[in-house]
Length: 111
Image 1: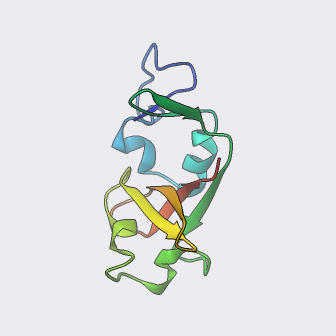
Image 2: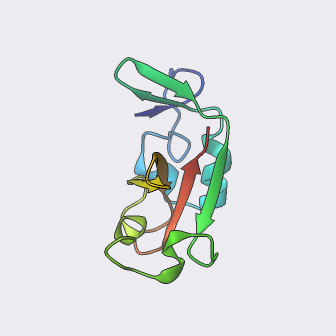
């Protein structure tokens, strides 16, 4: 679960609350900027997001650039969906799908 950098209290109204789909259903570039400072939490493990990259299907560096395939279908799902892939067969990279369903765009959480 993503929570705002201030711990989530009080809960901001959408689209500024990263726990809502509305937060991700906007420009991938705006979401990438807004995610910096948020805390990514799973159980007892948590870390502050300090670096992100945005990727849109119009860019050759985006996996969605090749269109909808079995490998890229997650990138075209609803905003807020997690897209995880392996880099060099070793590193699992976490991305958050952004913009409207059917658009291939995601934010890579780098650090």
